[in-house]
Amino acid sequence: MANHNKIYVDGRWTASSSSAWLEVINPANESPITRVPAGSAADVALAVEAAARAFDTWANTPASERRALLLRIADLMQARRGDLIRAVSESMGCPLHIAGWLQVDGPIAAMRLFAEHTGITEETAEHGHSLVWREAVGVCGFINPWNYPLHQFVGKVGAALAAGCTMVVKPSEQTPLQDYLMAEIFHEAGLPAGVFNLVPGRGTEVGRALCEHPLVDMLSFTGSTRAGIEIAKACAPTVKRVTQELGGKSPYIITEDCDFTAAVRYGVDDVMINSGQTCTALTRMLVPQSRYDEALDIIRTRVAEIEVGMGENAFMGPLSSARQWQQVQDYIRIGLEEGATLVCGGVGKPDGIAEGYFARPTVFAHVTNDMRIAREEIFGPVLCVIAYDDLDQAVAIANDTPYGLSSGVYAKDQQQALKIARRIRAGLCFVNGGEFNYRAPFGGYKQSGNGREFSHHGVEEFTEIKSAQLGAP
Ligand code: NAD
Image (spheres, rainbow, N blue to C red):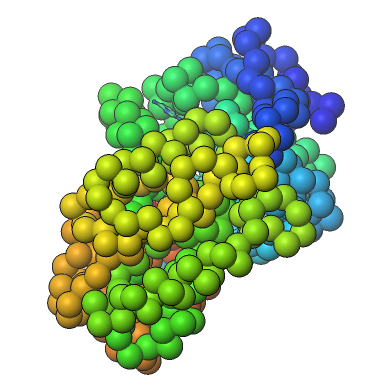
């Protein structure tokens, strides 16, 4: 807590040059937790210069040393697991008992996995009379959202550290707390000064300055497609590499002959977990017309079991902010106006809850794919159920979206499911209830972004490829 009034630059906690602050609000009770500086472009400049000074040494640190440091960082994250869980839970609203397995344990494991990839810059291939190898891309700027704040932090920072990059991180205005803990962990682990720098602040000030700074070689962003487009434009004049993890409106095809109850329940849980604030959420459930009413019965049963709150049995906490709550209410109204049938939920807070940005798990039936609720990302606990007549039509509906981040298929067997998965234009496919895997690449097609995070592919994004053409000695 002691450092929340500072920024972390060049290995030191230091005052921001800005006198503005960002209040961090607990969305479960609407009360302020703490405040952090709303940093300035001058803060960004100091941080970027520190990262640029640290780059040469860090990029040339032997892979074995970078590996040992990443493992030490993962150990320290494990030791401070409770602090990380509280930080995420309090600032973005995920119930404590869920935040551990959903928001924190995966990122700790991912940090450990990144240690396996530090050798990427020490491998050399021979192509004819050329040698080819990878080098760290340079100074990176990272801009993150609030929905899985530690996951997004580790996906960028862990990969960049493994590749030998230095960096400046801007967390979301709403959720900077786990980034402060991570800065403390890096400090304690002995990460050299300047390799990691933390400047909280607004997108329009700190984010913008990171995009425009000529010493930043690469900008990696996770957030809305709207901001992703602005960021790519702001990076263009300095020709930075830009990777983007953006929004989604992901389809989920359930076949006629699969384990139907399991498939439908999985789809409901996938959308409602994290209060629907998951970029990969399978928000368009495609159900065969022949079993449509049965699907709605299964959905009603599952949703009735979902407890909303922050208690030990709660499956859904609040939305992360008043703004997000309002956005969800607006979309529920739009769905009603468009003529979709409300199966459960609806506008307003759940019965008996007055305080906090809690919303009702909401399901719409008789949705057609041209409705706004089927085309636009709601980013809340709202599921659309769409009927299809045959699998060709299901695939066509699945692909009829500007997005392409995620998808799901539940079929009778894996072979049938994989056949359908190959036809969907999206970066991920969850097959027959498969779980998220930090060893696999993560990223989208179309307007869901560019580039991949996690795994060997995620580390490759942070490298340049060099070739040396050998002449006679
Ligand atoms: P957002 O785009 O409003 O903000 C994300 C970050 O970008 C914040 O740190 C913000 O300060 C910054 N920002 C905003 N405008 C900027 C600008 N013009 N220049 C520089 N920085 C700017 O998104 P959000 O509301 O925080 O997050 C929700 C969105 O993120 C959803 O659309 C969701 O789908 C998407 N998301 C995508 C992924 C993914 O991996 N594909 C993961 C999580 C969230």
